[in-house]
Every structure is written in structure tokens, then in C-alpha cells.
Length: 441
Image (cartoon, rainbow, N blue to C red; front, side, top):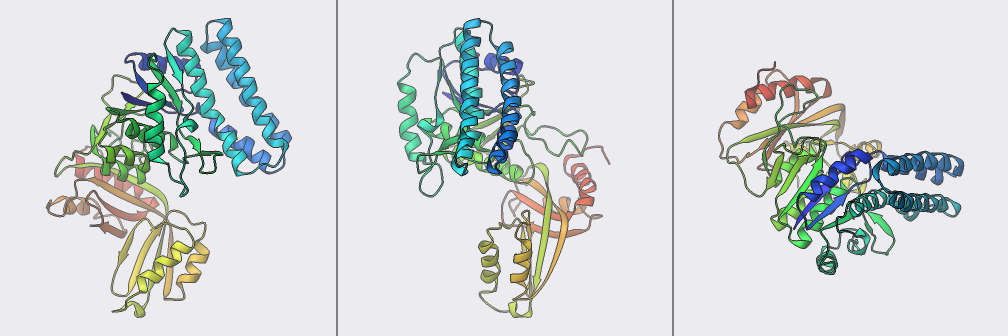
């Protein structure tokens, strides 16, 4: 059995849903995981914002606009009046439920229940379309088998026990349809997996059932060796190690969130990134196999802030770094990059919400400087320290770029440069030319 995950743009219209149905029906017996139709989650969050701020009129207007959009999709998606009527009834009941959430206290649990309706609607609509076409499709509710534990993490043991049981109970099924992103919290109330949740769900489900492969269908032709918005002539990367994919996901390759590959990695299940707009394209395969001595791609992460602290007290002292890191921990702010010297530490962060407090606390231990509008450029590949030469190639490409920080050695899979955002385009083009022999300047 394979797990097939389709993103929001892949099911973003009635026509695209029909295209997804064709892809699904090429091979029977698989588990299909769906995101909400594109634009739906943002619209639901808008409704939630109105309700949270005590504006039911605004929520009602936004809800009606979204409901109208879905009702138009129904007319285009289904061919029989019977199925159209059933689907309309389902959509109307869904939006009646959404409106009911604002009549009492509207908190976090209510917001999560509201946002979950996007995946519930898309999965029901596709399942009904397949059934109308004579396919034995079974719709599963993800919260029936995916829940969080007391630590707020997916309860993988529960999932591994529950999901196979549910699948075995439907021996007649030709395809299973379920939702990504949504789950139950440890308290039994509606919850979700957060950013990248649908991909994460697919990876969790694949690991739980021992899938032969996890297929992530999007509207992008796999991961590229550079940012196609900046560098011309980029190429899809055909193969990545899981660690390489995680690095690219973290450093700007938005096609795949870095956390989502972990369950597949530990279960040794390959992940394939495919393009619903070009199903014949080869895509990108991600697994635990490496390509020794090969540089795969370059990625960039914007909106980075660098913080440096210098103190003579750090010289030959123990406990200094612990005090610095505890400040970031107290403000719940993760660090991207870090470099140290005998009397100084430089770090980069992408969340500046607590920057003022962090800087104030750091000044108790030394002088602090802050550089904003920075960018991390990450070169990804087999970066084992015994592979002589790749560092000099990357450094040579950056010879005309002012580099604020360099991070190498913390991982066998990347070398990262912190530069000004205004130098990003020059850096990407230079690295592409030096590392991939491209012709652009």
C-alpha cells in the first residue's frame, strides 16, 4: 500500500479534483491524504479572527463568501442531481456548524474545530466524486486514529495500532480517503499538526502502515537545485537523502516542511515529490541513500537577524554559553546559526518577537550588537569533512560577497553563509555558477 498526499492547489478546483481522481484510480488499494482546497484555510482563519474579536457580522459575511465558492464547485464536480443534492446538504450543514461556533465563547478549541472543516470538506467531496464514478472509496476521519499525547506530539503507538485495524475492516475498499493536518488533542478535543501538517500526516500514516512509498503531490516539479525565482535554468533535484531534504525544507525550499520526513526516515520509507500539473515528470525521490561527494542544491532563508555578544568574561570561563542559551530558551526563541570565538558568540534568529527582551538580558553579560535584514544561504549535499574541495568551491563563489557568519561542521549535509538580504541574488547566482556549472552570471 502507498500513501498519496495531495496539497491544496492540487484539489483547488472541481477540475483539479477530477484530475486527482484520475491519478488515484491508476492504482487501487492506496491511502489518499488531502489538504483543504487552496485558499480555504486562510478564509477559515479570517472567520476565526472575526469571531475571536467579537465581530459575528464580519464572520458571517466571510463565511457566506466561502460557502458560495464551495456550492459552485459542487455544480461543476458532480454529474448527478442526487450527488449534487447530497453534497449541497453537507456543505450547508458544515457552514451552519461554522456559524454556530460564534454564538458562545470562542477559544482555541473552537478555532481548531473551525479550521478543521477545510480538510473535512475536501476529503468528503473527493470521496463522493469517486463513489459517483463507481469507485469503492471509503472515507476515513483522521481524528479517529490520529491523536496527540500528553506532550503535544502525535501518539504514534496509538496510530500504529488503530489505523491498520480500520483499514482491515474495509476489505472491499479500492481506495481510502482521509484528511491531513487535523487530529485530536490529548484532551479529546479538535486539534491539528500545525504548519506542514498535511505532509506530516502522510508521513505518519505511511510509517504506521508500513507503506511501500509516500507520494507527495503538489503543483511544483520536485525540489530544485536553486531558487527558480532568482536563478535562471534551475533543475529539479532527482534524488535527496532525508537529511538533505530536511536542510532544504528548513532553509527555504517550501515544497516540503522539514519535520514531515522524520517518520518516513525512521521507518525507511521512500518519499517521492510529484507534480499534479505534470504527472509524467520524474519528480524527486527522498530516502536514506546518499550520493557520496555530491552537492545537491542551494537554498536561502530570508528575514534573519544576527545577534553578537562579546565579553572578556567569556575567556577561559565555563558556563558562559549556558547562560546565553538559557536567555533564548526563556524567550522561546530558537537559534538558526551559531559561531563562537574566545571572547564572543554570534547567533542568528528568524523570530524577532522577543528581540528587545533578549538583547536586554544579554547585555548583563557583555556588549551586544544586532544586524537585521540578513539572509542565510545554505549549500546542501554530502558535506562530510573528509570530502576535500567542496568548501573551497563554495568559499570561492562567495569571494565578492560580504559574509557575516559561516557555519560548517555542525552537520554533514550543509555549509551555511549569513549575508545581507541585498546580496542574496548575487550570492545565489555565483554559487549556482561555481557549483552546478550554470551559464548565468
